[in-house]
Image 1 (cartoon, rainbow, N blue to C red):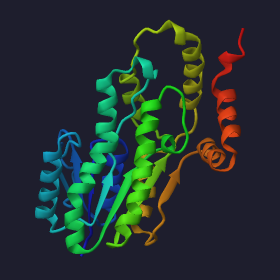
Image 2 (cartoon, rainbow, N blue to C red; image 1 turned 90 degrees about the vertical axis):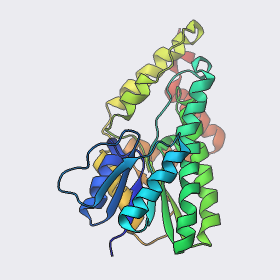
Image 3 (spheres, helix red, strand yellow; image 1 turned 30 degrees about the horizontal axis):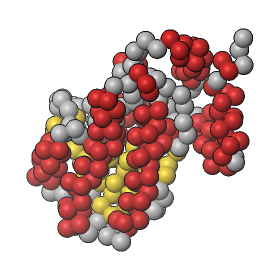
Amino acid sequence: MSKTILITGASSGIGKAAALHFARNGWNVVATMRSPQTAPEGFDNIFVTRLDVQLPGTIDEAIAAGIARFGRIDAVVNNAGYGQYGIFEAVTPEQVQAQFDVNVFGVMNTIRAILPHFREQKSGLIINISSGAGRFTLPLISLYNASKFALEGFSESLSFELAALNITVKIVEPGGTSTNFIKTSEEKYSAKPLPEYDRFLNAAFRMFDNLKGMQLATAEEVAETIYEAATDGTNTLRYLIGNEDFQRRVQNRLTLPDQAYIESVREAYMPFMTEA
């Protein structure tokens, strides 16, 4: 009997790549998105339906529709998310709320909605898509960092609670991908004029320009990692996928003394402090 996976944010990027990857490997896929599109041709095992993580009612409806279509749901991938970009002082309270509504509370609401089904069938798998920004910080993405740090702590703690119920929680941490994520973040950039930050912004923008030029993981490569997490039969919590720079940053965060790490970030990202 084929297993069924529900994926949020499946209209593009990692979510779409994951939906196609699982479908090609024989899984039934409940591909959810805010504005449902036509399922890809040639895939009878992909069911597209509406789910907006900011509207809890649509979460319940999507889960019910997926179960009605395929009989059960075995796994959920919480992929829907975005990055709020900009100086914190320039970000509005509404933008702060929206960042957490999507990246944190939306994930929590989706998990809360699926847990009764998982408890009833005495098994289930939850894969939360985090980010390198859930392990180390960068300037200009303080809210995105905060949301992903929250997601990491929630996921890790939840994994202990649900293990007793034969429900596994896993985290996939992409370190930058060649999707429309950067474009979406730039569109949400908060550009309230605050001239006191100009020197910092000039330096930070140079850093982000350098990051854009790095070799990034493709959405398909991340999808392969999600599939590995879903099928490897282990209780591994975290799965990293990214280039050498990303791997180095995570390793530094894990191994350097705290203040040494902070100083290394300041030296790398705040050259304006030593500029004339």
